[in-house]
Length: 216
Image 1 (cartoon, rainbow, N blue to C red):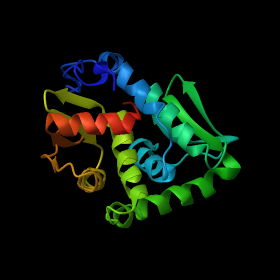
Image 2 (image 1 turned 90 degrees about the vertical axis):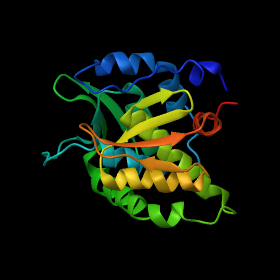
Image 3 (image 1 turned 45 degrees about the vertical axis):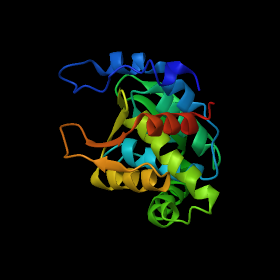
């Protein structure tokens, strides 16, 4: 894997009041690009479901020709989620002045897609607890962490990588996924803006980034 994605990772993901989010995402562009372009893996729906849980719009939205599954300020996260959803239906990324980037599907497919994502999310515990002899479950665990790095940002220091999950359920899912990867993770005390989950150990961080990006 390129050293740019590990050795040169800057310490990022500072709270919004101390560092502009756009600056952080720009500095992480090489990693974001590698994550968004990684192979889809055996369980694209679980990865998509994690992204949907983290990025779905709040409130009720009037049905239209196209309906948003998610909205984000991250082009890489939007592109990745659209790519994952393309295994089920047409999906597109649209930029709007009010909502930033929206990942949209046709109104006719919306309910079907939501049912599929809900089912994938509900199956996460059983899938991530699968025997290590089941290689597909490892791909599912990598997908969860891949999407978390795109949606929650990355705080990378020497020998430690932290992401921010948007809910306790998402944080615990990351802990379970890390255990499936033989990388013990810790869910730290909630902070403003999310629930930090960290993996410690240079070898573990290198392995995670290598496998999640599909680069060697």
